[in-house]
Amino acid sequence: MDSHYDQVMKAREGAEGATRLYFAYSTILDRQAFDEWKGQHNYGFFTLPEGELAEAQDVGLVYDFPSRWWGGRVAGLADVSGARVFGRVFPIGAKDWPIIQHKEGAVTGMCVERSVRVKVGSKTVDATAFTTNPQRASADGPVSARFLEALVRGARSAGLPEAYVRSLETSGA
Image (cartoon, rainbow, N blue to C red; front, top):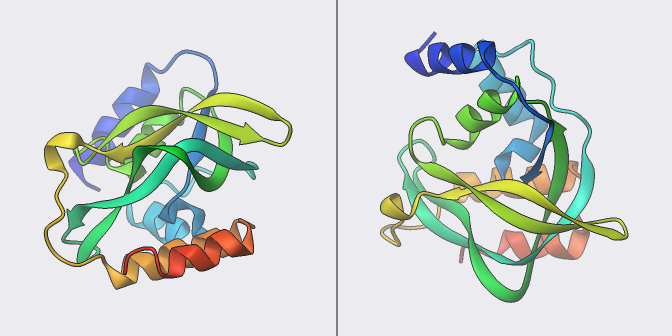
């Protein structure tokens, strides 16, 4: 176990509050990779709910975080009028929110939480997504091919629209 696990478990102990809506658009949608990550970090007890197909409004993907683990830049979100990013919205209880924060890189300061407006079915709701910490953003280096593969695999397995999945395949080029 690592110190991040200890931080997360301590945060879970005192967690109170309502369920939050989490907009996931990245590699967490790749269930195989997520299950592997959970195993590596001793979170086997956590199950990500099914979630609902969602479309974030007025944001686009931007490859602005150089990741040593992925071997290149990975995606965050940027405000882009009229753009959209597909993903899934998951209800996450306060006790489990620290696990999501760990997975998304907020615990290490790589990412920060941000609010997004998402269309879920016929309604539009506010949800929380994670994006690159502005202090860590950079366009240095190539986009990670391995990250793109996981992004596409996750988008497909999450049932995102096929036209969107195809656009991901070339989004880092």
